[in-house]
Image 1 (cartoon, rainbow, N blue to C red):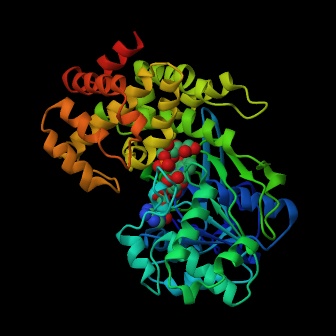
Image 2 (image 1 turned 90 degrees about the vertical axis):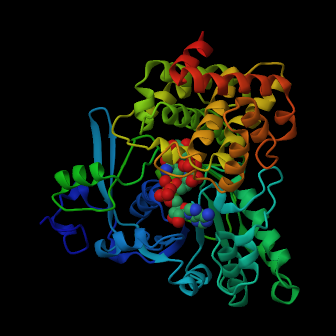
Image 3 (image 1 turned 180 degrees about the vertical axis):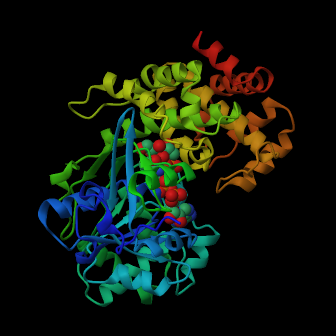
Length: 494
Ligand SMILES: NC(=O)c1ccc[n+]([C@@H]2O[C@H](COP(=O)([O-])OP(=O)(O)OC[C@H]3O[C@@H](n4cnc5c(N)ncnc54)[C@H](O)[C@@H]3O)[C@@H](O)[C@H]2O)c1
Ligand SMILES: O=P(O)(O)OC[C@@H](O)[C@@H](O)[C@H](O)[C@H](O)CO
């Protein structure tokens, strides 16, 4: 049986495949909440490169798995080492990453998580907890006090990321552990401001005696920079594990395959020390907004569109959807014709070249990014990716039919998934409401569209009350059911 990747077997690897740092020499200066695939192939890679560039040993990462012990169980036998295989056409580069030095499962070790957040050696806390993990109201950006948040407000041991952050900050302040920078790395609009708002709202809801002065302390000691992150990182697959084993001669159960493209733009607003990320390609700026809008509206909007059309056509991966010529042409047109006119690109950006890269990146056949994964949590994604730019297009007198088709495909997918049309049940924090709405719509496209448009937590008034939008969606949802996604895409492209 092939031996496992771990500290003991590491020296057997070719130097080119070994970490750029000595893993055992690193202490943890970063705690990362939500240690999924993305952090491991993005921020952890930049952080290791920065440590190697400067020789600093302060920036190892303690990753926290929030919902399941899966990542801990996979990585612990590997001493938290894993490989990242960058693949594109004939180009590939494989490297074991050594910057992740500890993984905790919050469900098993909640007190230790708070202790790590409050340790004076921790200077950075980063997050990839998915869009829903912020518990933010999409319309207002304020904390949504749902069941999980309510439970955390009354609990000593929190389960939500916002609860963990606040408990960690309370203890940091009590123990005078020093300043901290909290860096959200999710595809969430104004993610820094959103994280700060939900943290402050949570503080205000706690009993006054436990938070007296905490907000002032946060203002003086904690920064919440916004970030834009971009790299396609699918979940670990059996294919990835086999390919990496073939190349390394060791088994890595956590192997990740990603693209060569990577981008990280960070608002330059820190409290205290940070890794020298500027030396390894991270852009620091005073305003992330143009980068964020370009990413959400060009990359993520078309990704969601391909996911929903792909699922309606029973295609398992995003690259399978790009292999369908009319879907690829549609995604390209969506990005160029309807999304690009809604953004002010960051200075120096060649928007045409960026647009051309979007569909090419999604077509990378080595990236087995599942349509199901991209499609999940649609109620949290489509407002920022599609509805907001559509509302702006409508206000400017345009008819964004291509974007409307993406929303119609989401509606058709929701209708089908809610009634057992897929092997999985609908994955969305608002699944109960979606199932209720789609159930009462029966087979009527008009009732489905009207019901979904009535969900005020998803559709802002200007979109829900737009007659053009309602009528266009109703026709498209009906046609998707009658003629299928290929024919509807053909018709829309003309
Ligand atoms: N994978 C990508 O290509 C990619 C690219 C850019 C940005 N991102 C951002 O990173 C996020 C994570 O992506 P990933 O590929 O690592 O996913 P993943 O499924 O591998 O990891 C998700 C992590 O979030 C945690 N989580 C899930 N729901 C949560 C909740 N309600 N509260 C707290 N924690 C929760 C999980 O426990 C897990 O640790 C995405 O949602 C996105 O915002 C991902
Ligand atoms: O990761 P999510 O779930 O926010 O969104 C799914 C994809 O759109 C996303 O992962 C992209 O592939 C990624 O944002 C590219 O950088």
